[in-house]
Image 1: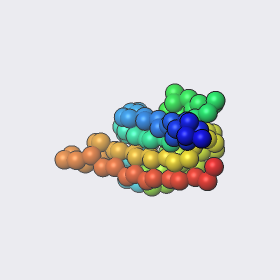
Image 2 (image 1 turned 180 degrees about the horizontal axis):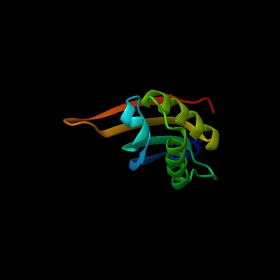
Image 3 (image 1 turned 45 degrees about the horizontal axis):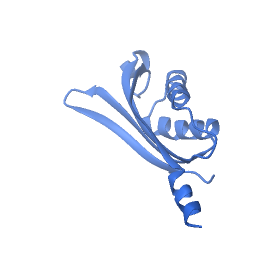
Image 4 (image 1 turned 120 degrees about the horizontal axis):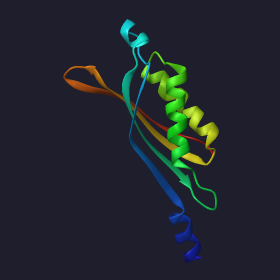
Length: 121
């Protein structure tokens, strides 16, 4: 019985994707709608690993592709849309932390918005 508990604890894994960086159109200001700007994405995925794994390269590609295609107005909208898109494509995800940073929008700081999502798997 004890070995089963230990095995179950060891199967809970986290994937960290840090500083996924690319340019896309995001924002509500006029220049943001026409000129792509640099964004940095950080995320943590938690899931139960048994036999199937979550391919982190596919997660990163999905996020970048979605951000470039959707051209979000608000970071908040991007977060919510991305969380659902990632969950739809990687059903094993139990929790997701997602953070979007716009490092160049203000001259004296980096601006980020983040959210934790818990899914019923």
